[in-house]
Image (cartoon, rainbow, N blue to C red; front, side):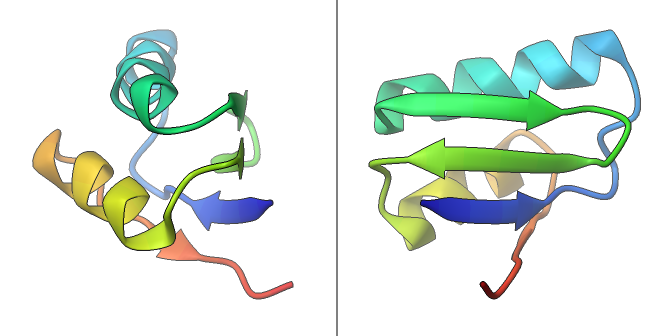
Amino acid sequence: MTLLSVPDMSCGHCKASVEAALTPLAETVTVDLPGRRVSVEGGEDQQLLKALDAIGFPAQIIPG
């Protein structure tokens, strides 16, 4: 599992955009809008980060 911090994600539209960008790259995507975090199962970290950056939501991996 990869946990991402997406600090610029602040509304329902943002959440939908993030989900749409990551869903094709992973098995499961769970967005925590209030925490501005995304949990991803089955994705490649660098692809996930690039996909979010491409839609204007730079993210960082939260070490676990």
